[in-house]
Length: 275
Image 1: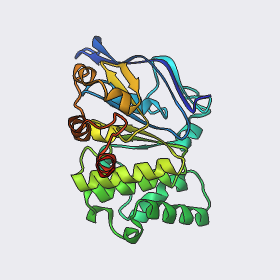
Image 2: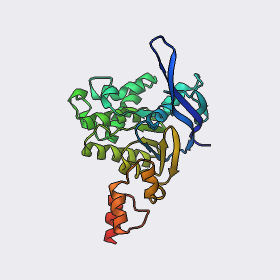
Image 3: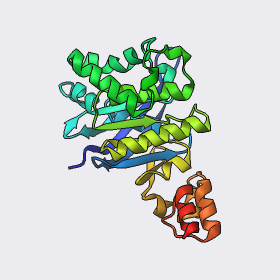
Image 4: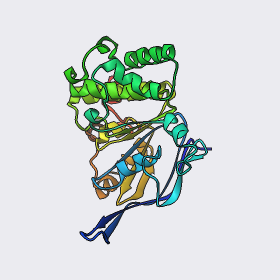
């Protein structure tokens, strides 16, 4: 059984007129079905308005489908009895780190989630220290969050999710507001978390980030337009163009050099050239 199962999900947003009557509606997700296996690394991409962030919020019950279902380890997100179990298993990291930080001191912020789960203080201490070390921010634990850069704040947000000890973390465009150095560090952390066995789901509009995943799902107008491994998806430039996406620079370079289609990033290209 898949860890996360999405079946025929429909999410519809309704716009009301001044008198409170429905004026128009739009299906942000229209019959989406997919399974996410435990321990996998999945990227979800698509043009603006394709439904990426809406889907992300469905995966731990922040949004409930009008039609269809979402289940986490067999628990339906519509079942109030299970919603806190679901959210303890599926963590979320959002685009703007300032919207996620709830405390003025770094370690207090990371401790917020475990405290709300009723974890014993000694265990919270261990979790906070472990999470901060995992994201390379342990030395900043006593600092004020307002003193950190955007990239550092995002790493604190990730540490807050990690301290909850989830089995899965959904990253909703976590690098969109960061500079290249910050983006690179966050991607390194995501890859390390996945290597440690955490299921990672990355919503992104950077195709070079999506290339690092095991699987890429492309959304278009609320529907799944493609679902493939990176080497398979990027081997069809015409499809990428049709979907309104760009080939990652590394893939463009790979194709110009005539390298194998399984080469998906700069490091792999460098290794192939050395050989």
